[in-house]
Length: 251
Length: 111
Image (tube, rainbow over all chains, first blue to last red; front, top):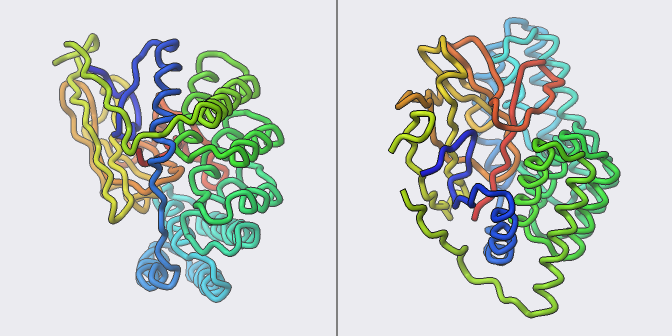
C-alpha cells in the first residue's frame, strides 16, 4: 500500500527508500528507454477547426467588447501565421476562471501568442501544438530561444514536448537556465530518452525538496543518466520491450 | 487498507491509450489540507480551466480524481468550494506570472 501524495502519473511506483529508489530508477530508466511512446500531434488544421467554436465560447465569457475584439484578432492572426490557437483559447479560459481583468487576459494572451511565434520559429518545422506550447512555456520560464533551436537540431524528428517541459520545470525550480539548458542538450546529444528525461526531472525536484541546491541536484542526476547511457552503450544492454513490473508490496 | 494517516488509496496500474497517447493521472489531496471543503475540483490546461469539469471525490480522508492527460508539462490547481484556489501542497509550484494564482506542475510521460 502506498499513499499517492500528489498528482501522480499512474504507471508504476518505485520503492520509498531513497537509496533503493535510486538504483531502481536506474533500472527503470534503462528498461523503458526504448519503450518511450512517441506522440504524433494532430495537424493544426484539424485542431483549429475544433477550437474555432471553442474560442468564440471562451471569448463570450469576457465582459469587455473591445478586449473580445482584440483577442479575436490575436487568434485570427495566429491561425493565419500557422500557429496553434488552442493554447490561446486555453489561456483565455484560464484568465476567466481565475477572474482576471479583461485587460490582463488580453495581455497574457498576446504575450503567449508572441512566445508561440518565437517557439515556432525555433522549433520549425514542427507544427505540433503540444510541442509549440511546451516551447512557449520554456521561453516564459526564461529559456533562451536559441536553446530551443539547438534542441530541435539535436532532435530533428522526435517530439521535444517532454524535454522542453522538463527544462522549463528545472529552470522554474531554481536551476540556472544556462546550466539547465546545457545539461538537457547534453542529454539529448548523448541519446537520453524522454522517459529518462522525465525521470530526471522528478529526481531533481525530489533532491531540491530534500535540501540539495538546484544546480547540484541537476548536475548529480544528469550525470547519473549519462552513466546509464554509457553503460547501455558499453555493455550492449538491450532495453526490454516493456517496463519491468515491480513486485507487489506486502501488506 | 488504511495507511498511517487513515487514508485508503488503491494504487492503479495505468494503461496508456495508444490511440490518444493520453496517460491516466490521479490527483489527490489530503482532506486535512482543505478542512473547510464541501466540494473540491482540479482545474488546469487539460480541462480548459473549467472549475466544474473535474470534481474530486472524498473517500477515507482523501480527495481524488483521475483523468487522462496528454504527455508533457501541465499546470493545475485545486479549487475549494468553487472559489478558493490552492496549489497542490506536494507538487512543485509554478509562478503564475499571467494571473497571479497559485498553481502546481505535473509532467506526464507515458511508460
